Image (cartoon, one colour):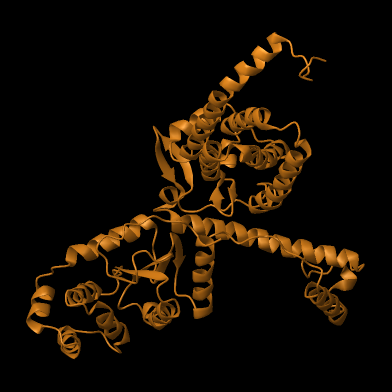
Length: 455
């Protein structure tokens, strides 16, 4: 020990330490910059198809990882915010840097754990993990090692509590397909599920419904057979006796009592059915200059196809008005004309309603058309216009010149392209609902669509 009571340090070691101290800031800023780049690329991967394709070359889990969120904010956004934050901390409060690095390391461990347990391979995730590992080596303290471990552990526990619950594994959560779900890409241009089902939506739904009914009937048969076996009742079919002794002609009371027992057992708790009805078809449609009601930025859009001479449409119209009143500010209601060929004169009524729209009286005029007890003729249309204080000359000239005939034709073409084949039909946020619906069912469809938009 020398006179100054200092521990001797070899000059070579002292020189290495000084060199590292000088280079450390450059390493730190390089890692922060690299982390920002990785986070930005991870965010852009969901917007740039070529970047998603590049990531897919290294693994199939990039899309799944890109969908990870925390408090419904994508993890890529959190990554950008984190690296900007530690840049500010390193600049202003360098002594606090290790604490924030430990927090980030805890979250990164959670993400790596999810990748391992869900067998996800993501290029950007691995690159970000490498950046965090280097930062960890640069800032892990020697004296406060236990404090650093504690911070990292708390961050890991907290993130591991929230992130997996907000992002359940695909094997446990049925993926929800929406109209914007991409089913193909051609040179970067996407084809969505709505594009795919547009024009054949009704036919697809009919086919899926037919398959569902076959499966449902078969399921009921299997349930009856299983219940009969559990109760020791011998049957061969859904209510057919299994032997001559059980023939309803020979002993109808005995056979009916067994069938009744099975029916009673079917109504008891303990039978859980998981067969799902087919989802409503998605369809894509142009709104154009169709009459609309409600805010443009409403969370829900309802497109109604209707015919003023259709009895079902007349019956459904009061229900539609109730729905509009029940959800103020939440629905943008679009009306499109779909006059059927068998309803002579329906096109003229559709044009007349659009002429009333010129004077901001479309919805009031529509109420009068649907409420008419008989086929409205020219004189009745004039009466409707006068009752709404319309400019009669302007209204009459508009109707007589067929000013909006082409718009009605365009609506009929839109109906054909969207797979609409019946009136009334309602497209609720891209999903086609054919036929009139009772108020309860209509309200359920609206609520389901709103819940899907606000998970």
